[in-house]
Length: 135
Image 1: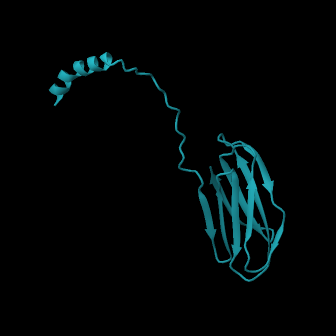
Image 2: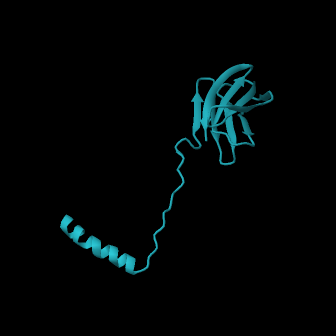
Image 3: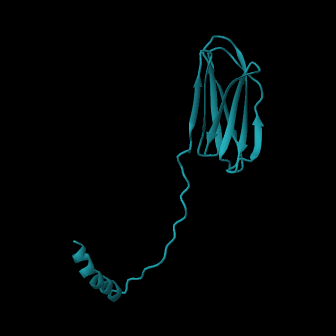
């Protein structure tokens, strides 16, 4: 097999040159690792079920659902970071009272590019969940 390739290589090169094909040097842009895109983080215990994810529009979407039949006051905090780990800013949610059996849902957007969001949920002024979401 190697002998055939060695024998045909000059003929193939000559045929390519004779056909006036033009070869250019093309450089591709580096591909960013997309494995962390739109990760969803979830948490569940006997009292709360929480989830958060990044959507395609630069928003962090999250929800907290109680498993008990009590009314709770919820609040969320999202801290945004860039690729270098520098804090870009944070968004504090207002206290929201949610009746028993209903979910607390939030959607926070950030106008600048961010790569990591630190999501915190509070219920009745106590932390119930914390997770990092990556874009």
